[in-house]
Length: 207
Ligand SMILES: Nc1ncnc2c1ncn2[C@@H]1O[C@H](COP(=O)(O)OP(=O)(O)OP(=O)(O)O)[C@@H](O)[C@H]1O
Ligand SMILES: [Mg+2]
Image (cartoon, protein in one colour):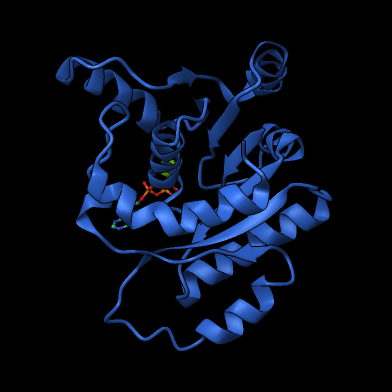
């Protein structure tokens, strides 16, 4: 399966959840590969740092891909690998290659928060997927949710999002989510993400 983490909103947790999801799949014994097409190369950098700091063998591969080569990279992957390809998108979708990725996706995971600014960008991302008739199953992942904040428009937002995809359990704001490793799986992080990720795994039929 091709599983894409996307949203127009910068800093909503695409990279964080892409890595945590890969860790979670690996923890569950599932085969996955992470494709970093973001020009920031935060996952590739993270992996290189982890390779220096840890002795353990990585549980999944991280591929450094250029946005312009992505169609070929996906096609090559599908030919040789029957596992899952996780793709971390940059925070903007105005590029033809990004549309190609979305058109190839089986699952799109959209991290978001219930505040106004995040919702406006998320709405734009939904409109783009609608315009290009993206067929992927969409999961809206409430992420970085502060228990002390009352999100005034939460119920209203949920009603709208439900029309486009499934809203998963929430991932709270936790420091452990900021300690991202691509080699070492933190049990505490697994506890934070398990409900939301299980919901995606079950409903998307990720084997
Ligand atoms: N559940 C969470 N709890 C605490 N911090 C979080 C959580 N999710 C994300 N963050 C933090 O929020 C910041 C932005 O996250 P991240 O880099 O994953 O977003 P992004 O969507 O990939 O951003 P960009 O659009 O720049 O690629 C990071 O500092 C990350 O550690
Ligand atoms: Mg990112």
